[in-house]
Length: 199
View: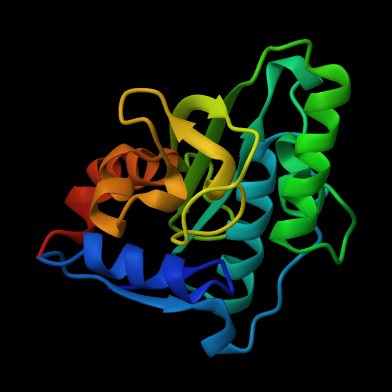
């Protein structure tokens, strides 16, 4: 069974492929099929994940998996939320997004540095699937004042796991996968579609 992963991120493809080992599933990235990314016009992680999965399923004629994820900080009214990847602007990179997050927390946070990563993953059997499989994972921690670590991406260097006392960027891949929002969502999604991809 071939499944399209609605992302241009090679790391996500490798992670999904690794976690689907033992199942009768081949995961291909949308770019390998010449599929572009749609505009993310939803107002929630669920809506954006569905938009991306439906776009890929329509253009490929194959089942599709998509995720949408981000960091929600209560002291900032839930920001950056669905705008996490472009918090400092549409062309901003990780460093600029982190810089804005830390500046906003310094100005508006009032000492509350809690943050939660959310990841929603969806699986569509076809573009008109009326009952998509939807999985959610979350990871709550603390936003540190100074970036630490060199692994991962996004806000990982400033997101500290409270139990480990390490940022996500200080964790190796297996340790991060075991705790992260994306790891949780992916395991739940695989459980939800296991019968369909059983070898």
